[in-house]
Length: 267
Ligand SMILES: Cc1cc2nc3c(=O)[nH]c(=O)nc-3n(C[C@H](O)[C@H](O)[C@H](O)COP(=O)(O)OP(=O)(O)OC[C@H]3O[C@@H](n4cnc5c(N)ncnc54)[C@H](O)[C@@H]3O)c2cc1C
Image (cartoon, rainbow, N blue to C red):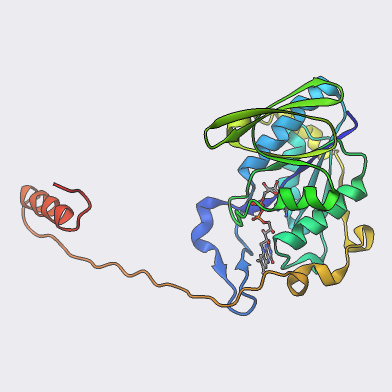
């Protein structure tokens, strides 16, 4: 195997989702100042890449489109065992929808070159469209298998893939190159060893701009994205409050009555 590219997306840490808000002007998510984590499924994708490298050799390259401040997160992927990383970072990428993001990632894959397998998470935990991987495959003119729950390299030029489907699973055989989108059932991402953290410090993160990958600016960014947010409706959630008075027994009795009255529990 020559090269495995793993697409990793920095996403807001779910512990801080209450701080994510919408920009009323651009109608995009405001994520500034919110701690980021690597999209959890992307760690499963990376684990799969590391296992493939162990049995079939090759290089594991992380690919991410994100602002430069995402570098410490990318280093986490390097500490897990990836060989190097490419960070697609340019102001002209900002505001890209999923199609434009896939366009930029596809250009990144071409720029890296010589890939046999491109691994992604099945979906992110923030945008969660699950569109990127199929769009990426289409743009690179290679196949995509989603919902991957099993992966084996049976020989140097063949992969045996188990795909989850509604009624169970199917086993597929594929050559290279291919885009695979993985589910969490596939594996358990390895713990990062201390030696991995030390080794990651000297691994390379190449920051690549649109001058390098040369995507048509008309097809990327907020203005080049076909998805337009037509409107925004911010809902306010107000809770009714009621203070229950009495002894503990009386309060418990009233509370149980209220729970039944509200239909939370049916008799
Ligand atoms: C009008 C509009 C404006 C937007 N503006 C912004 C913005 O300014 N900033 C912003 O962050 N988002 C913005 N978004 C959201 C952005 O489009 C999505 O975050 C992005 O397209 C990825 O889609 P997703 O999260 O649904 O990916 P999914 O398809 O759910 O992700 C599947 C997999 O694709 C890979 N992947 C996805 N995104 C990346 C990435 N960036 N780098 C590497 N791998 C990736 C990962 O492996 C991931 O597990 C905007 C969206 C719209 C519609």
